Image (cartoon, rainbow, N blue to C red; front, side, top):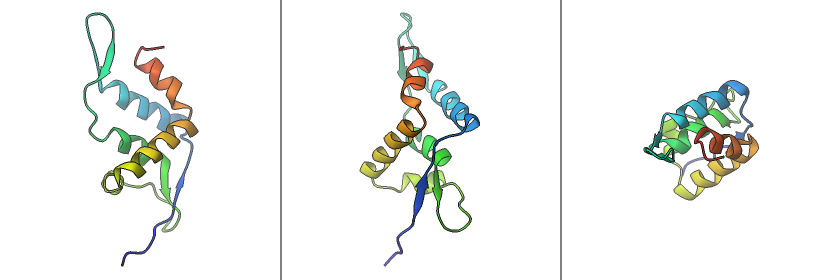
Length: 100
């Protein structure tokens, strides 16, 4: 049986927020009318969580993409949404996509 692992979800700092938004805008495809859509979802949620989810034990390091990708889908979505909310990213992500 595996031992439970404790994590803490933190608000992004400015550098982490900028890195996440830069990664997000690199995934956008813009059509001739200026409408933006995501062209690649691979690792999108993990990209945010590796910047905001940290181990409580073992020095408090950030989780790895490999760890995050092993979480059940519902857990991943819930953590992703909470992380966006904590860091105020919903509005910024909309602006980055040009959909404000």
